[in-house]
Image (cartoon, rainbow, N blue to C red; front, side, top):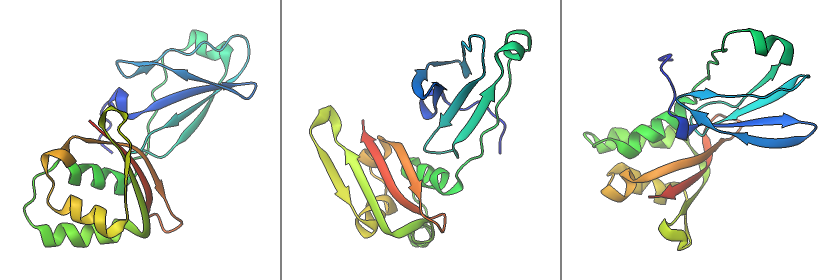
Length: 161
């Protein structure tokens, strides 16, 4: 937990009122919430942090100073992100670490650049791709990560840039 500001492109904030979801824009790490005269619910999602639900009381939000919201990182997703952008020093260690954090039933979908389609990888294929990261791997952006019951990564959606 670094307590540093999270990059805006790594987090999505949704306001929920009367079962209707409205995406909110994040500017400089801040979200402007218009709560009206009742309570409103915010859902914060990110592939690298655990989801968080917050209820804001309209009366107090208008008078109080902005609230800081701490998100809990998903350690395995953070490791995966680091593997994708780092240079390799010990490929055998990286292979063992990937084996520990990736589920045996891993599904990876890579959305290709310019909407040209998608590629599908299983655990072995994706691990091989990450063991020695190429320029292509470093330009990939993780969009979604889901964990299984054992907190191992079970599903990854990636956008190729």
